[in-house]
Image (cartoon, rainbow, N blue to C red; front, side, top):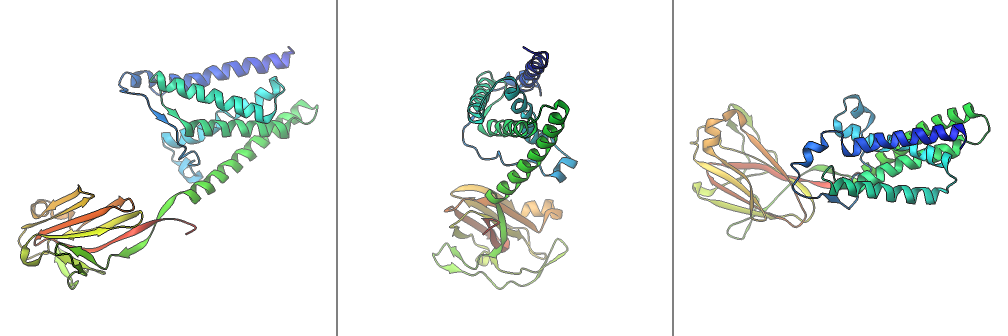
Length: 312
């Protein structure tokens, strides 16, 4: 081996040991493994395009650093491996990806981490950037020129992949659309109800003016309303008991029979600063919502925001 190749080989080995340390020992993994109850395997890719934006990196949290670090930390392998061995890109990326899969599996079965296919894909993206930079940089016999071009190519390719991941992540991520008021709810008599006239009232010293709809229990009796959504939504409603009425009443919300909200007039009496209150919850398509109102409780501006892709 030439001196240059020996140096690259030594650096690669030392860097690999450092990567092993971060994958198996760093971040308190040994202590966490004692509290792990079972294996964690994530086989379906769902978030490998999710990388922190430049604004997020100004005040990064640990997951932001992990996300971009999963790519940057593996760029050197794409540079050094082809310098050490003559290898085609296809063979390189297949062997590299399989190696990462083995390491991810070792993390999971040793309870020192989890198997996450998203991490494996991000690691491989880093290696691809490195290999691309090597191909662009090492084209002449001038060593310094090669290193400078390779370093610049690495940065340019990283920024390009980073930007592309941001575009794809945005294209694949649903966002809440505009608010849509629910015009009719099915009541417990089986009829569609548009609610009562939405007059203004005072609640905890605030003037409340419902904009879209308002529902209440008739004569203080228990009233039940149901709604079945046809698509993925975020459901909203406001609730509370107007002033000059006693605090007898309650509101409860169920999704497919599971209670997700319960509030009573006693809660409002004890914590008036929390009212009027707004409730929101993400709901999957085809779910049935059941809302029960009792006593003097009122709900208003009941509606939803559809979860849509930005290109919709």
